Length: 363
Ligand code: EPU
Image 1 (cartoon, rainbow, N blue to C red):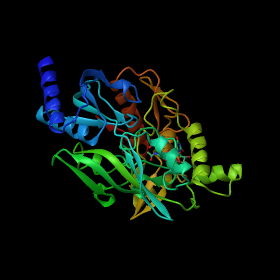
Image 2: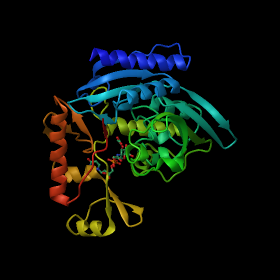
Image 3: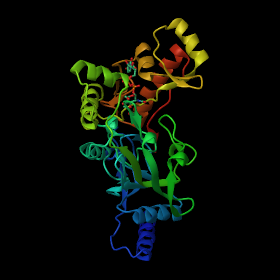
Image 4: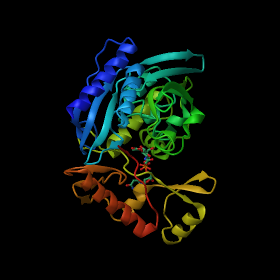
């Protein structure tokens, strides 16, 4: 164990010297992942280090490759879960900072943001600048660099709508690359980074195009209902941010107080003929037309109908305000979480013959 640690340290020092770096990268061993994941579960990371620059990120990834161990770039840990056996490789904490306006025109600005920045602080800054494009994604925990991985979205916006390009270290080609929006393969809560190119790219910056014009209706249902209730008719990025924060505060548990990873399941995507069949039995089943004969059915609704709301299974509570969320109240292990997950999946499958999918990534 120690010999291995020495060698990984040696490699990294050599590489950093090669890059004429002076900062010493500490490598830690057997670090409990639950301290870095908002679900507060999982085993240990064999190695862990921090990367404060793209060069450090590349150096860390190269070292892992040379040691023949996998690497995992971790941001805020709010959409990742770890198994009880832990992670057998190197976890790199993304600490690459930065917030720079790289283009400024009368109608829009392009901002480059370091992957290690806190997402909500980024949103707050752009809202202060009166820029529109990510204000509805206020209050989402996690880091900026993780946002493209699952194509983060909320209240009618998703990052695919504003992301121009991102910068990453390509561990396969051993080079820094710029990927344009179209190359990221964005779809609902997904991208190449969690599909075909899993583990290949370490994202260290994102560039977003944000507009100087005010946000325009139509707004996402829940948002519009809130505006109607409080009588808001003039819309600014700040007004939208405040509304979203209020709605989220009411519906979604704060991971700092009640460990969770936001939506634990993706909404279900089914075809028109399936919806037609299902509505014969459940005429009230909500569904949003995605075009191409596809419909999105809120999994929270399915779970609620299946009678799972507010149930506690192996220490995991199905959140009463939104059944998509699993809260770790007293679960001791990933196995507990898996038991709850399977119970929910089975209940929905038994009732609706729909296979729902987990949303957070698994290390
Ligand atoms: N619903 C229920 N029961 C529930 C939950 C929802 O009946 O327990 C119904 C609601 O009444 C509503 C519909 O389902 O008619 C949709 O619910 P909501 O607008 O609350 O959104 P969601 O589909 O549950 C998605 C995202 C959230 C995001 C919200 C708002 C996914 C997996 N989840 O949730 O994202 O904040 O929309 O845009 O797409 C996250 O990814 O971690 C997350 C929280």
